[in-house]
Amino acid sequence: MQTDLEISQNAVKKNILEIAESVGIPADFVESYGREKAKISLEAFNGKSPDAKLILVTAINPTKAGEGKTTCAIGLADSLAAIGKKTILALREPSLGPVFGLKGGATGGGHAQVVPMEDINLHFTGDLHAITTANNLIAACIDNHIHFGNALGIEKVTFKRCLDISDRMLRDVSTRFKDETRNDSFNITVASEIMAVFCLSSDLDDLRKRIGRIVIGTNKEGTPVTVEQLGITGSLIALLKDALKPNLVQTVYHTPAFIHGGPFANIAHGCNSIIATKMAMCYADYVVTEAGFGADLGAEKFVDIKCRTAGIAPDAIVVVATLRALKMHGGQEKKDLSQNSPAAVRAGFANLATHVRHMKNNFGYAVPVRAALNLFPTDTDEEIAAFRALCEENDIAFDIITSHRDGNQGAISLAENAASDIEKAAVACDKKAFPSYDLANGLEKNIRIICKKFYEAENIVFSEKALARLNELIALGYNNIPVCMAKTPYALNDGSEDKNTVHIQDIALSAGAGFAVILTGDIMTMPGLPRVPQAQLIDFVNGKITGLI
Image (cartoon, rainbow, N blue to C red; front, side):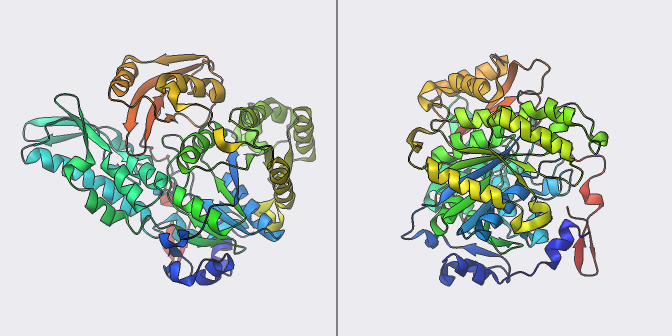
């Protein structure tokens, strides 16, 4: 049996110019990076409107058993193309943190992959390096400004350096200048504000405005100091101008795929760039995209942050689950997941049912929602029958998909049913008021709304630090901006034993991105590596990369 990497390396890939031509992207707008990758000029938007039907793929709360959300998104796009729908895929770029850490890459699996897998998972076209460099140029210029007299009177620095590697030693660092020591910490690049700004910008001018208004600290009067005041916005645009162009690649079955931007969904907003999604919507009839982790994080932020900013809305939502993950939610140990247990499926099904209910009811219009069961070889007929019965009992539309094994034939029923759902719902959907909360409510009320709607928690506990920060943001005029919740992806609440309570530990302003980050529980913005990281398994042998998953 071939590994994911072997399937990718053996795939027959078309020239990227041919992939672009297949959806009508003129060759003049294609900037090739070799024959299998390209950036697409922002001029490709000229005279085009993002009219495609948008399908969001989300999931249940993840487990160590895996759910295969990206695999399912790729499989759905390939199957839509297989039934004759003009389709483009829009995904995030992988972070090197997970690639060398616990999860591995983020290019799908089996016969549902985007290729070239090695390039996409590693350096790709250099976007994450550009974002890291831009972020750290800001940090260097802040300290340089202070060193040479501090004309802006910066008293407190809040902007953090970043690195796109999981490194727990950077969670708590001290820097020293002359006799002054500053306690500080790093973010992983995909949790940085530059990444969020990059993915929420509509064009170069918007990127410039957003970068300029990033708050890097406060002066002695408590007034925010911005990047624009440092006078370096132009240099940052120079670093990011090429990165802002979406990357075009293909699936194993030659479905075009835009892969661009990569914010984490547990500590950032978890969606690929607005530019890539809207460009895909200009050249396809159907666009399949995904949002990170479970629906409580990725899907909520996709609608309330990304779609609100972009002026788009999903036409359908797919919630991915596996029997293995449901069994873990039902209490079965990972080592026992190959054992037949319909009872564990039934015990864990509540997680799927909860997310489907939230997707149906929590937004401002009745978006069609389907569950997708991502089948594994160890799944038994009894477990599948239990899942089928539970979906019918809970009035959940569902499809069983085998894209990992069967490629573009593995999600045909999901493709047909999703397209049919969209057609039936087209008249009924009023997507003008789709977010789950109104910005006019203010930060505190909207935090409570999200916690109640998506985490089913009634008791919200603010630490003294979080309350002080909330009041500070209100006083500074940031009360009516979107909320970006930062919490564990593995549970509906913040991971505490009291499922009815969410603990707000701190609040951070991302003025450039245009939202406030609400840190809950013990969430951290710099992950660590596992005991045996993927970095010990990856190699370059006989002209080929090995060990990537």
